[in-house]
Amino acid sequence: GSIGIEALRPAGLKLQMLSLRRNWLTSEDANVITSLVQSMSETIVKLDLAMNKMEALGVRQLLEDLPSLPKLRCLDLSQSLFATEAFAGARFARLAEVAPMLEELNLTSC
View 1 (cartoon, helix red, strand yellow):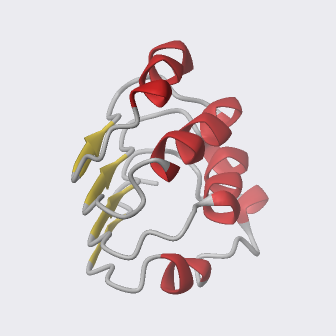
View 2 (cartoon, helix red, strand yellow):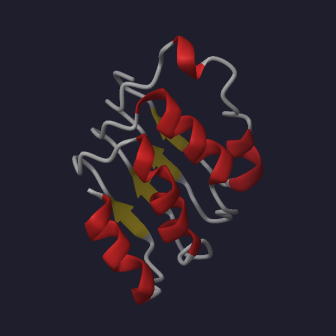
View 3 (spheres, helix red, strand yellow):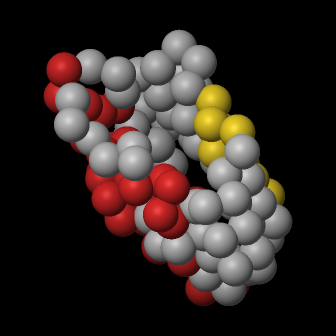
């Protein structure tokens, strides 16, 4: 969960790929994810958040709070169970603003 992610923040990693797949992340962890990604905003190309428990509230918050990710090409949110009525009106269009190079968006089984 977020305790392990919190431990990564002070490292200031400049990763190109970050996989947090199957970490049982919930909506309460969305702010921790965006904070961690902030430190690698200039380098990250692939962000894998698949198979977590973020649901509608978490993915909504993630979309609202993502920093500018100018090199991000792939975002995987598959199997995150967020496509519910509570997700209606979420700002997916914001991805075009914060990740203008995005080429792949995986929403399988959401």
